[in-house]
Length: 492
DNA sequence: GGGCTGTTCGC
DNA sequence: CGAACAGCC
Image 1 (tube, rainbow, N blue to C red):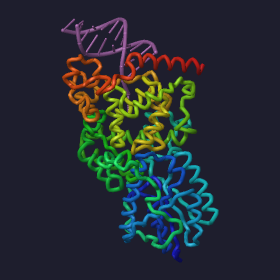
Image 2 (image 1 turned 90 degrees about the vertical axis):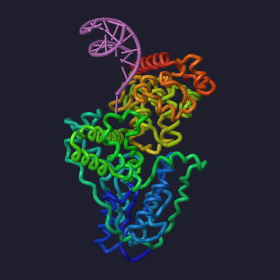
Image 3 (image 1 turned 90 degrees about the horizontal axis):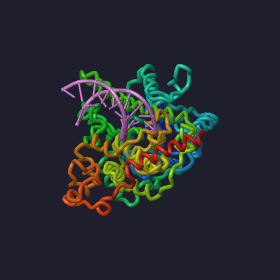
């Protein structure tokens, strides 16, 4: 390589230059040691296991954007400013560290078990080799181990958790991107190209709707944040549950990959509240959603296996149904419940679904269809651009009734009432379920109640142009409540 | 972060 | 007779 000492910046879910503490530490280290920074991204099994079709698509775009930003900052035209590797992260880093010029490695912390286990081992190994090795806090406002109840335990309920967070010292101001970067420009063994990651979707045109809706990368994330603050935060508290109004931030995939930090979001929202009297309520409603993200990570960190094990033990005895046909219909948006089908189709086409609709489609799956929440989780993992190890399993346990501070299982959403309340004119349904486009408002959320005349006028034939509901709402509700009772009996 | 059903209260 | 509310799942 070279004689100059090298600091490795190991990027993971922090694909940004601004407010990146590990990067700043690496840059500072390089400056003080008259050295250079070697930015790397390693596609190992831990990361690979956490990717689905939609997140793969996102990651490829995000890495490309990050490379460009690093190249600009490091004053090179190289398309390999960010060095890419595939394989065991420990092996890769040890191989890189075999070069005697490599003296230090920096990264920002993650909170899922496979990552923390890996990172702990790597830190021990690298320090054994005599390297400086630093992990930084960057992707959460509050470390999971810093938020404790009065009796020194971790939290199980959101409200007291978030109250406790807000009593801790205020999250630091976001830091700027480094002003310059002494980028290492030499050769590194076993470095590969982004195409070798094999992240592009097949078939290629599947991602058209994702492409249209999202701009992965740090600039896209900043634009998303400030468009939201400027135009939509004002109505957020009042309209956040309305999928037909699109006032939510849609920052989740950017946060998922760390293209923007929660500190940047927190302070932008608070500055908005300070500058706009009367807007404190809507701002804190929004900031409380960052709180849910923190809570999901808190739970993830303390749980044994959030993806597979219900936090409430009695749910091990729940009589889930093995309904492959129902699952398939749900995945394809062919359940016969318009708001559910709209959501599932929005998901497939854009990699995203409005939060309120996620609750409705989740409730239908685990309650009316009695299908295991893990099947819903797996589908969301594959199709959502924001699927992450914390929010996705946390939320499925929430709607499954078995999670932390979960919706009780007997709290069953009625997709008709939810549709009428949160998509009152049926605009959201009409957008994603075009075969119901001409249904009158009164029946858009319950076409099975419309008279033959009305159906004909709307050019709808149930069972042909649009499915009959998979199950009657009353029947499904009663069946779910019975299953719940059976579980409680079985659990003793 | 629900919904259903039965009851009460106000007109 | 509908809105408001309680109790239950």
